[in-house]
Every structure is written in C-alpha cells, then in structure tokens.
Length: 234
Ligand code: SAH
Image (cartoon, rainbow, N blue to C red; front, side):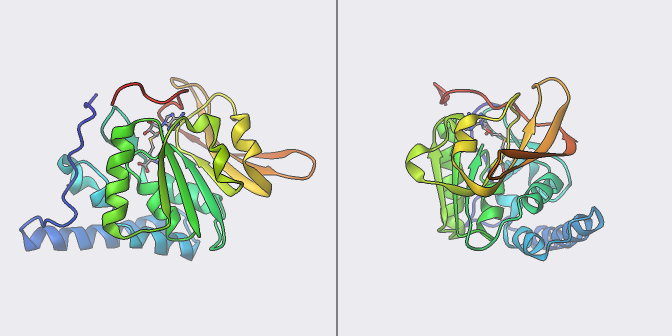
C-alpha cells in the first residue's frame, strides 16, 4: 500500500520529451478505440473521456499506464478506477446536460472530471482530505469550474446541497445508504457497487420511482470499500 503522498505529474510542467507527448496521443487514440470496442456507444461519454487528460490523475510513476485499461493505485491506499468502468458507469448513469450529479468517492477526481463534461454541476465527496485537496487542485488547473470537491462522509449524503438527478458511488458498500436515496429526485438514478470488500461485488443501477426503487444488476466488479466517517488522519 502506498502512503498518502501525492506525486502526480505537474499540470503545467512538461515531460520534456516530444516522444512522450506523441506516445500519449497514440495512447489516447487507442483508448477511444478500445472503449468503443468494449461497447461504449454514447457519444457524450466518449467525448467526455476525450476531454479529460487521464495522465494528470494517475501517480507520476504510472503516467505511461494512464490509458491502459486497468485500475491504478493512488495515494491513501485507494485506486483510480479502470477506464472502462468509469466509461460504463457514466453511460449507465444516463447523465444529461441539465443534471446535478453527486459522486461519493472523489479519489483522484478523474470520474468527477469526466462527469463534469456532460452534467451542469458535479458535487463530489471524499473522506481523505489529502485526496480531496489534490483532486481539487487538478480540477482547478484544468479549468473545470462546475465541480465542487467536499471532504466528508458521503454515506451521510450532503444534506445542505439539495436534490440530485444522478448519484454515483465509486466505493463498494454492502447496502445502499438511505441518505443517498433521500437525496435523489424522483426519476433519478444511482449507480453503485454493492457487496463485501473481500467478496463478490455487483454494479447495481437503482431508479427512484413513485412507488419505490427499481433495481437492475449490471456487472461483477471490484472496488475499494465505502467506509463510514471522515478519515481521521491524512
Ligand atoms: N472515483 C475515483 C476512484 C475512487 S476510489 C477516481 O475517479 O479516481 C474510492 C474512493 O472512495 C476512495 O478515495 C475512498 O477514500 C473514498 N471513500 C470511501 N468511503 C467514503 C465515504 N464514506 N465518503 C467519501 N468517500 C469515501
């Protein structure tokens, strides 16, 4: 497990090598192709992925793997999700340009950045201050102004922030936190991984209807656990 130290690539600095820039361009083109081949068809999602430089969200030691389709370790023992899962969850969330979206589990800020290219507003909550501060800095440098990064316990929702059209949870819980269901508008969608931290987890899509919650199971997945409370250190 790596510590809570943040060493991502400088947003303003350069790698200093033209070949690195061109490798990155090729990597991004292959990445788009791979997402299409794996079944991502929503053009708004594909465009959003193209607009967010993933290499700025992964640790410096892994920047050559930024566009490879797997999860990577970030600080505080957490992970940045596999790009296909980011794309798939974003597509399943059915985000529209007028939507307010809540994310629980900011991590690197990458998923929030992708969502922000489609939605009107994104509020994202992270229990580690270190991760939240680093994500906020990246997002500000990229000039994405419609994202609000909050430090807190996302399981408790964000009661002072009103209702959300869409909610995405990027850490696995064994049940759906009621505060999140309460924060959702009628007709709203939640996409979240459900299951034990060391066992079988399933990505689930919940739609809040007039009569209750409709549930659809999507994919087996592997996420870090959703933990209660704000992190005491880090
Ligand atoms: N979406 C992230 C990946 C998230 S990893 C990205 O794009 O990089 C899951 C994150 O959820 C971790 O950073 C973890 O600290 C956070 N987390 C776990 N439980 C939480 C809670 N109750 N409230 C807020 N964040 C939480």
